[in-house]
Length: 387
Image 1 (cartoon, rainbow, N blue to C red):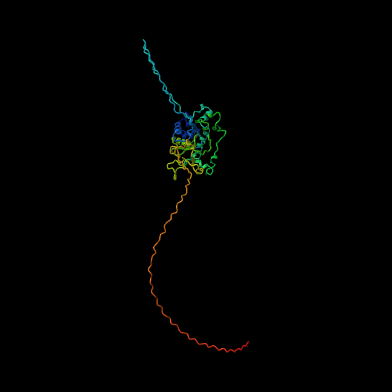
Image 2: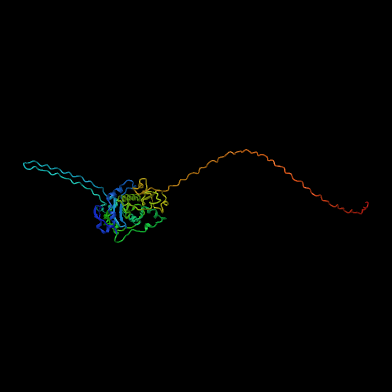
């Protein structure tokens, strides 16, 4: 069980003692560092890119319960009053007592700095100041970052974009935790009698409820205290999702709840040394296949005027590793070279002289045959007749 300290904070111009309300005890770590000036400086910082639109900012505790909702368009700058000047009265010397005039003292006017004093604006005016649909998206981004991060590992909503695309290992995750709508918390969606409280800090009708929902777009970050324990999350929505992430990153840093233990982009093998781990990694190419099943996020630079946030530790954005179009070169044809046939010199060898061998003459034995005598034949004479 957490040790709850009594902390007085100013939220939306209302002084609160968070320890006095049991229902808000788990939000104390988040609300203790939530300040109007942090929102103003984070939203107005250069290098955020995007359109420069007003944004909604939501904070939830470690269980996803909504702690506060604000709108940047309703946070005014500190007003400066004019010092009043009193006139010194001059008494007339009479025959009596010298009159003494009293110096008038003017009061220095004090301007108001508050989170979304929307109650005086009326329901329809809220949507005229900023995109009303992004209120719930900001809450869902905070809920998503809290739901899928824990003490040992932080996952930003930007990290979920490529993983939840068709073909990604987490495809379908975005449908897993639908927005909670019950009879007890329908007010968090807004109705005609409570829209005047939208974005009014802890008076927003979503405070104290679990809205749930999963958003796989940049803008949601888990919050970690100095002991690297997750204490909640914040969600920003209203500009491009890349700009929403940059604003949320700046706000978390200002709240000093950026003690991230680890994430997809940190640790051994990280392509960005020094990364906390839950940065938005922009893929600048146009090929969806380069993003699918990775923790990358597409570029939000949809026109030349709408740019991505400046990459760096201030915005938590890592430059794109997109793949450009492969260029095709023409195959060069070389000329076949003709060499000159070389003529070698015929070598002349020395004729070798062999030694004539002398054989021994063989002597054969003369054979002696016996003469054969044939018999003399005797013929009878024939006498012809004279014709």
